[in-house]
Amino acid sequence: MADLATPGHPLRVAIFGSGPTGFYATDHLFKARGATVEVDLYDRLPTPFGLVRGGVAPDHQKIKMVARAYERTAQNPRFRFYGGVEFGADIRLADVMRHYHAVIFSVGAQVDRHLPIPGIELPRSHAATEFVAWYNGHPDYRDREFDLSRESVAVVGVGNVAVDVCRILARSVDELKTTDIADYALEQLAESRVREIHMLGRRGPAQAAFTNPEIRELGKLEGADIRVLEEEAELDPVSAEWVASGQDRAAPLKVKILQQYAAEKRSGKPRTLTVRFLVSPTELIAGPDGGVETVRLVHNELFMDDRGKIRNRAIDRLEDLPASLVFRSVGYRGVPLPDIPFRDDWGVIPSEEGRVLDAPGGEQVTGQYCAGWIKRGPSGVIGTNKPDALETVKSLLADVEAGRHWNPGAPSAEAAERLVRERAPDYFSFADWKKLDAIEVARGKEQGRPRVKFVSVEAMQAAIRPA
Image 1: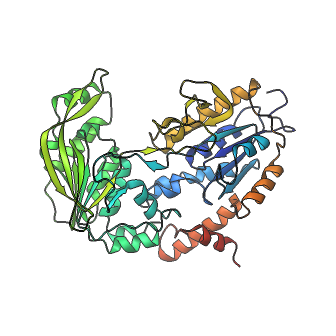
Image 2: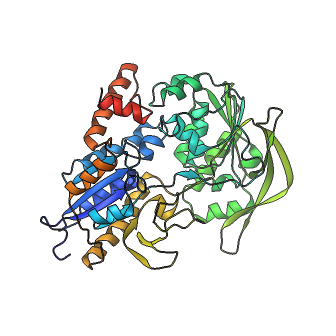
Image 3: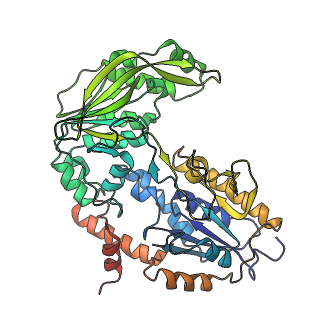
């Protein structure tokens, strides 16, 4: 790396997005053998950790413990955190190029994929992403409104996010009040009149995207029975052959769990969660008040396509499901960043091994890299982002070794900090976050909860910088 990445001339990297991927990339850079690296980690929100704070369900506290590893990474003296600083608004690409040798974008996939059916925009039809952010206290979503006075709810999708939504809707208030769910969400869920929850999957039980621990947990809810229709739990010939092939080692157990649920009798709990398969919504139908009242479903059959993939196709059978609150959970997609290439059809930054390309299959853009969901799409679990970030970091370091990097005019931590103070004077440092974290945990301890979150940027600012 010539004289770059040495103590006298450290390699400076900006990372935008402080979720798991951003911290994994930071850690990999710090562990690069023979290289001195400085990392400035930026986030649009004042708080770090991305979906660990704002996406992981509040009743899954063990998963959130992964943040302890990120805390250790942040202790490196060559690390700086700039929370409340947005790329493209506060800091532009030209600014980044003036102060860093390279940039990594790890901003995730922030919006839901569209479900193109009639009625999808009716009142009481929502993206699951919004509901998840709402109950987790995300500042951008704290004022969202969800009509929990409705008795029947449909959740479209059978991934882990859909499971989270169903589980939170099905939990009793006693189960929720020991979590770090947002206070306003706890209050509204305590008054919920939801009694029937329907999770809808377009393919069969073997192809469901949720993990086995997630579906098992649904059978242990304090106040809700889980129900699976026997005919939908049975494997069709295509699925039976696929499961027997061993392509998905988790599939046999998944099918066994679901078939056990199908055989069980309901125990009379106040709520029922029904997991459906081989059905797709074709239309949301409005009731007299103009809001969604019915989900029209078409039943499906499965087939193997020419590439060996199991697909679904509609058959001549329709069903009207009463549901006056709908959450669609059919996947996430990224959003474009100013001045950065973007592939709109996939919702990702075009890249090869983490190197940003000017177009799909095009030329490498010097100095620009991406990692995580904005690189590969919304797939995998938190740990999947660790090897993904490593691939990107390896590409970046190899390029630096070959002399392919920016040549910034002011490559110093002090110069970058001066710019941030000028553009976003109320930014959060990691020390600020630690202070806020301690306050939230202390507030939670008083109530027997992991923490009580601040849910607005203004309240966060006031907590650490009282007037």
